[in-house]
Image (tube, rainbow, N blue to C red; front, side, top):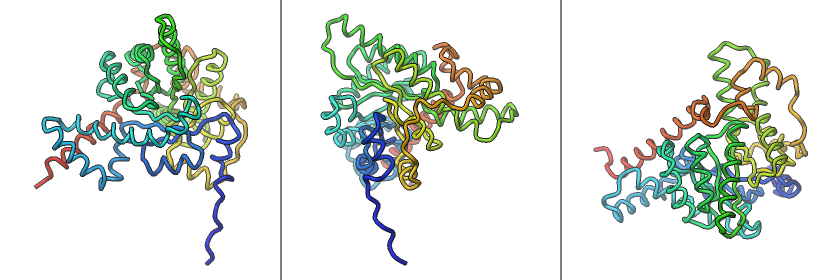
Amino acid sequence: MTDAPAIDAETLPLRIAADTTPTSLWNDSADLQQLARSIEFGAVGATCNPVIALAAIKSDLATWGPRIARLAEEHPTAGESELGWMVVEELSVQAARLLEPEFRRSGGRNGRLSIQTDPRLHRDEAALVEQAVRFSGLAENIIVKIPATAVGIRAIEEATFRGVSINATVSFTVPQALAVAEAIERGLDRRTAAGFPEHEFGSVVTIMGGRLDDWLKAWVEKHRVLIEPGHLEWAGVAALKRAHALFVERGYRSRVLSAAFRNHMQWSELLGGDLVVSPPFEWQERINKNRIPVENRIDRPVDPHIIETLLTKVPEFRRAYEPDGMTVEEFGDFGATRRTLRQFLEADAALDALVRDILVPAP
């Protein structure tokens, strides 16, 4: 057998899209090795969450295990959770350094590293704001994730006013994205009224398209609703396209961000838009390997038959797709919200357990 020919990185779809479209690629992990590779593909930012942070730490325990032990010696009264979050902060700061050149080049619009607020604070507005301010001070190019719940929306406005760059999380729907964008606008307007200097915040508003798909699939299964094959794979894409169009129409100073990938359309169908796509590194490799075409598709509407079918048969899609589908007070009870919050809380608990095993190993 002969070796496969080397692949010219400049011909890879992600690199082509990064060089020829206004759509920004971010890496959905703060894992340092993955992020460095993703930057070669054209990535200009990175996102993270408790599940991803836990995976990054577990994948390099040879580094982080001894570091946790040293942190425990340096902070003899710190508990498991406190030590775990120290590691998350260190991981995030190291990843942020890789993105500093792009941060400088773009004037702060890109080159951002997301760090997520502790999901255990999701009911406490003041605690979310205080942690967001603290995280924002870890590095100049840090962007802070706050959940798109009623409590989180209030925290997003206040954190923006206090100078924090925002990335919404636990966000799956058009009404959530619009509420977050409006909160950011209010925070920025308050800063102007208070005479604070203006600068590029680079704030983004995540829609976790794949997690919306997951929830709708679970809903139709529970309610025994039959949907034509493939229709539900378009739900998250449809929400992202609609949110992007509304952001452009209304002139928001934040961008939509596509996350939680389940299919390549959550990248390919958004190309051409001034927004961010943040695939996991594995999805980036798949997109490149399969040579997914780079075409301007952001303004191509989803098949009206698919939209009408979903609106008619799946009330949860209507809640997610229509701008007035939910009130802010209803965000916390949306199925995808509860499922995702639980997963993030479980990841926090798993990080605590990992630290515990290092500090108090089993006999």
